[in-house]
Image 1 (cartoon, helix red, strand yellow):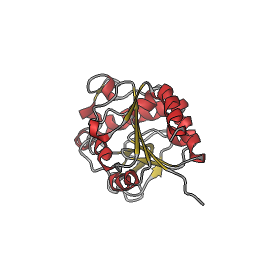
Image 2 (image 1 turned 90 degrees about the vertical axis):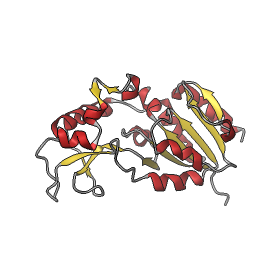
Image 3 (image 1 turned 60 degrees about the vertical axis):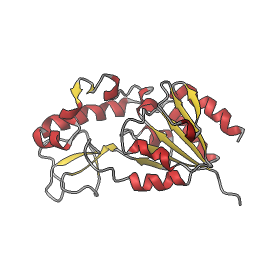
Image 4 (image 1 turned 180 degrees about the vertical axis):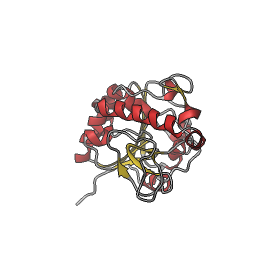
Length: 230
């Protein structure tokens, strides 16, 4: 039996923005009024863990209220025709709620938490995380989110997945955050490459991307038309 073509999708904040989730890049380094250095670094956690937990508790509430949009749903529907893996920089679970079954979260997942002593074992978050909520190992629970300055555990796996792509789609990411942005350099030369964004990031012409300059929910329709012709 012929194998399904391997479709690899790298998504960023632009796809979730259309579900009402903002990012700090919308306002010059502020995230819903918070300085990112005060809430999304290991130093911030050491300095004021209560503020960090409050910030992510608010973000988690926003994610719970948000719903997958047409772009999320369209990507999930492609599982019938493609072996599709979504690599996302987003910490929300909108891809999963849309129905996607293979999702790699480069920067963590906000509805999970872990001990600040152990990066590996994850737990579901209830209503919120508070100071004094301890893991079985005695460590304070913290959001399962990769902060600026921390290692990105899923990078190795993501690199391998990108190297297997027959079709690669970049959607809703500025390619300003590393090491995630470097994944485009692992795309096979033979792969068909597409980018959807209302502000298309700078991509070297030698990479040969087909550009769809549109919001994710609109551009995904053009992408679906393109791949029918492959």
